[in-house]
Image (cartoon, rainbow, N blue to C red; front, side, top):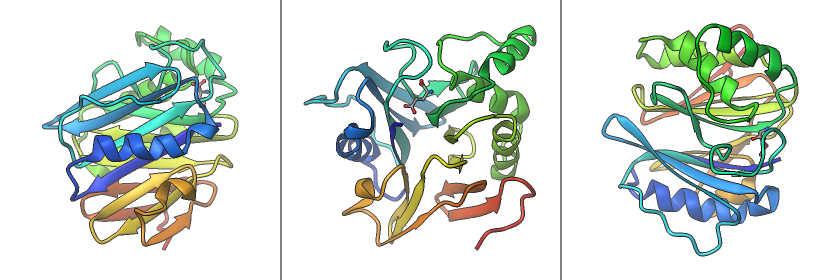
Length: 232
Ligand code: GLU
């Protein structure tokens, strides 16, 4: 279990918005926390072990970002294992709720392929799987395909969200672990819990299992992760 909150839209104070929302979600996990924002073509991350408490962020203004409060299942409670977790290129960052039951075999294959792991989490396989599938593709469609391909390799009950700095998107998909999306006139939100969306979103909707959503500055795209068919 963990707390998740993400935003894409017209506001510039995304980092603080995410941190405040995470405080409401700390009952879901308080081993560590982290916030990532996309800024001028790169991703900046602040993470810390323990409760958020009175922490303040030193992140630049941004209109896209997400954050996570961790309930550690794989890997100790330390800085390296706190989410968000990057791929090796730094192009994407991942947050995750759940347990990837087959992460050992996925990790072994990725290591054989030359991928270097910096954490002990099961989550990190997602970062490398998506990165591997993406290559140099920049389009939001390519990101959806890469996230779908990675997700379909995971066993267990999982929700994953990927921040991609090139397409400036948040792409999420889930199986059993809850995710909810929300909107207001100035942007789109995603969270593990409607509590985090209170005061932000005018409309909310729970994701179905295998529903993939992609939040960007032009709105929300929603497809079935198994066959890419649109979900209204
Ligand atoms: N299994 C992941 C980890 O240990 C995610 C845990 C969570 O849901 O907070 O980092």
